[in-house]
Amino acid sequence: MRPMTDEEIIRFFEMAIAGGQIFVYYQPQYNHSTGRIVGAEGLMRWRHPEFGLQYPVNFIPILEKYGLIHRADLFVFEQICRFQSNCPPSVRIPISFNVSRHDLFGHDYVKELEAIRKKYDVPVKYLHAEITESSAIGGIDLFIKAITQFHEAGYLVAMDDFGSGYSSLSVLKDLPVDILKFDLQFLAGEGLGGRGGIILNSAIQMAKWLETQVLAEGVETIEQADFLKSVGCNYVQGYLYAKPMPEEKMRSLLETGSFETTVPTLTFIRGL
Ligand code: C2E
Ligand code: MG
Ligand code: MG
Ligand code: MG
Image (cartoon, rainbow, N blue to C red; front, side, top):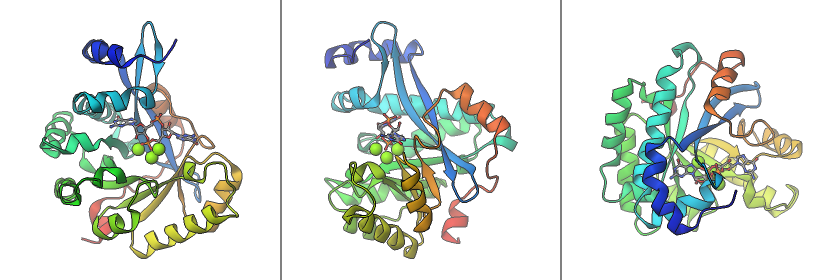
């Protein structure tokens, strides 16, 4: 069990897709004021028979570098659509999928996603796109265009890892995203009483004034959860609540657990 080298990743990738080695883990997202599940994020995993379970940090940058991420992301999206189509409508929740900036350039990505979504007949409100702020590097125009295309097709768009990029304020001003995801890892071990807590609190209030939903990810401690409650950030995701899990486990959680049935849609969020 060891991380694969770049060469192994490139060499084994096609076989991994064809052989079911690439799959999706699901991490629930909660409304901690009600304790209910409001959604989940789909996260890519690769289990190689020889090298063991591989995490995105080790292989996604390589897939991006060698032009393979587009194929991988479409594959993950298809798995998520299949999961949703097998889920009885009464226990369905929105699932987020990650979009690499490489998916957006040189592809009609939303059109490709739409073909898959329609094949599985999943209502668009059950699929949320997550784009990282760093995707805006090297041209905000393409990014705005991508968000517009997602919106035209009915997808809610979350900005992932908000605050960890380089140009949060201008990005926030110009990009009409629906959800901001704050990654608490940016506190890097620092408590919430210091500068990090002040910035986080202000950013959450700013998002609310902009009528953008906020979700904190990477929530690991009760102290963090209490802080988030006190500043009115109700949506959370993190090891404190649940770790990413295999799809059978996610499904049984939905079948036995409690979750919100009012699913946010563009109409709902933007008052269209
Ligand atoms: P992300 O989209 O920001 O996803 C959240 C990451 O934080 C996940 O790591 C998740 O397992 C981890 N996490 C969740 N709760 C906690 C917590 O309480 N503490 C800590 N320390 N970590 C937590 P993961 O699954 O290793 O994914 C890492 C990154 O890889 C993702 O960050 C995303 O940028 C990328 N990624 C994952 N799946 C995909 C995919 O299908 N396509 C693309 N393009 N990128 C993906
Ligand atoms: Mg994400
Ligand atoms: Mg994130
Ligand atoms: Mg992250």
